[in-house]
Length: 301
Length: 269
Image (cartoon, helix red, strand yellow):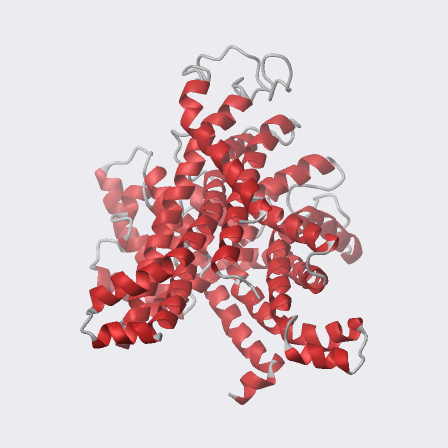
């Protein structure tokens, strides 16, 4: 379905891709015809779809217009930096978000809850890219703000990793701040659902300390829907990664996205759409499977 | 409505007033790059209380001027998105069967797709303009509304009074128009308010990526300009802060109003 969407969006919606690809540039009718022939756009739609779809199954996403290389290769070499950034940010955001959400939700209406909720709502309203620009300006030369590594770093493993980590700070802080806000709110409301449950009264009645009631009883139950939502909102992280990478010139898929849309490089965009949408769908499948592992009730069903 | 909600509503009233009055407040040639006489990158001070941008235009006037576009796109995109969502939700909830099942599949599919990625793709293939932005945001953000409205529709249709209406010979139009729609309206209103908030953020993101309407000033477009002309290396905080703060304040206001309405519509125990 992702594949069909990708084809539809870039081949059917724009009418003639060649016209929109060459918009604003002087071209002759002959040049356009040649482009059409090169990309196979002069064949009937169903034939185009068939060749696109069979190509996709073989891992062939077409050829990038700007890079003059296969789209799959370009995407593959940008995958690492994005995984590093998104992975780090998601991990920190999930841990921090769930922890803050539990703290805030357990003491509903306390000053801590009000501050956490207020900050989260504000961060939720902040555009990712703007936060990135502000951080960049505020920290000045403290952290490098462009790219992933310096060219003059010694080639040994330790200094290379330190350099990458140093570059990673600002982009991941930006991404964490925005994504974490969502997780805090999700975890908080999920815990609030549990606070009036009868089993908590039982737990308290048998004399458990408040801390234990929270840790052993409320949180394990409340964390399930929260984790599911975390996976479901993975699309949000992807969106955040695009703008964060654009602001910090982080050489990953997000920056590639930006390069592709400024082109505009249709085949690259199409490939990126298929890959990111596919990744998000896979994450959702994972969420379903994980839910089964975490929750015995689902496993039985 | 709680205190935060009231504060949000007050902020929105001011923002709407600014948007309407902007043509009166901003002199026609003050934003024309060819006609401004001030020095570029001037920090805030006498004459320009928010400084000037890369072309010597007043940042304060630019932000005022951008209010209308940002609010307009946010509102229309939210109406489009919530409209589609309500339609899909009510239809798939009311009519069972194969078609509704297919509709539900499609909704689920679009629900998990990263909407920003889709919106970027849409606004790249369509011609640049305000309509494209509205379309790109509206067409990619409807599924969550559809899910919620569908759930509400199913709840309502299981109630005895709907069964009674059916037994008395009420057709589809009657049941949907008289019973289902009135009961989903509060939910839809809450969703619409929250959708405006996310639409404004989405607009600013698309505009920041250079996909906005090049002939109009919006808050996102201003930040795009700031990035393009190097406001960060110039340390021109006065060009970076105001548009962003405007976005945050208005989006937060919509969110607070939405949450306050939500608390009214679906009270928690």
